[in-house]
Image 1 (cartoon, helix red, strand yellow):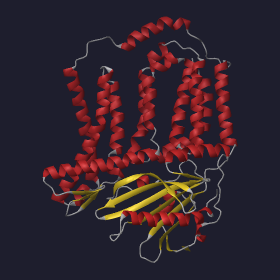
Image 2 (tube, rainbow, N blue to C red):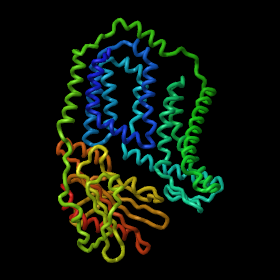
Image 3 (cartoon, helix red, strand yellow):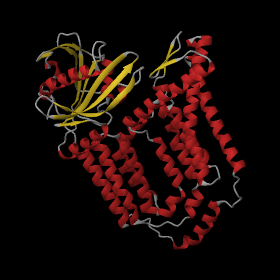
Image 4 (cartoon, rainbow, N blue to C red):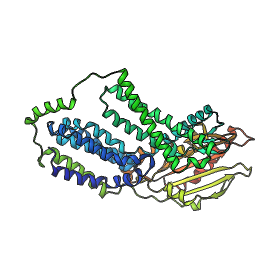
Length: 510
């Protein structure tokens, strides 16, 4: 059995390893609206395990070396998350390590008895920012589209530009809080609980869980449509504040009601045969094997000693070695030239609240032109060290929304004036008659990267081998003016990139 001395030793080591990680989880991630439900998950898991206490106790306990098949990957996930600065990997590694320690000390049969509570624990960990931001954006656009269609079906005059709905008398903006993400995640979690207590075949449970996704999207779109309809009748103030929150709760209860009706329909159409409670049979069988149980509670067991040594080494390395040095720029951006070649610029500045949000070390922003009145906006942000929670924010999500539609987006390769090939991201966005052409890339320690996945991988590798995670974001935007074609705008922005790249290299450490 897993005795209290083992629990205490494991607990102290894990708290020391993951203290900063779970501090961030409590103070930052769970403070976000879409993850506010997560604070309830530990209590639900505790109840689910308590409900299985008799079956857990009756099941034979066997110490197993096989649990190291999870422990080693769990430690690897820890280092991947620690060095790449990704909290989700750290959350996942903590879960994998806890499950592996249970497997090592009580055996796989006992772990199976509480498999669902262990799996359900994963729902309290927020997704990585670069994934959740993409989901938020997609949900905003989709919910806005369906909401506008509902309003038009009702007879209202509604026009959509991105996530902005123009009703004529007013405009409604579907912001992140109204994207439906907070309803989607919480409804999926609730549907998992519902099917856990729903005695039915596995395929029925899958139907209920997966149907919660389109139901939530539809319900959120209905909420947006109701907001527009009520705004027309009673004014925009009626859909703000307390009423807005009540409307969200009403939609949530509506979705839950539909799920329960769905379960009822499945029961009527596909009735389940009567069967004995599965846990009773398992408990009876387990009690017969109890006499041959492996009494592995000793602190001297080799499995316990090896697992403690591995975790202890992980703790020692994480606390004793600094894997990220803060690398200063070759020269600060306040020396960046506002004129070079044929380009002349007007430097701009951001509000302090945006600088604080971006967690950047230094930045430069200016509009450059050649005297023809056609400007190129240049922005570069530098990060001395991409620590956990402090990483580059990709324009892939920042450029979207706000009424802008992406007509073209993807990676491309530029040929600079010196013949060098340079990978970049390119996007053509439109808002009514206005078109903008955007290029962006991530200079990272002598490399030029184009996506968040590359950054995470190289942050991990360079932190491990070079003690560096510094990096930058460069973004270049130009309007497609009325008297020119997209090809003319391409020529202008590509020419600017060719001219500014040699200058930029003298500021960023290679």
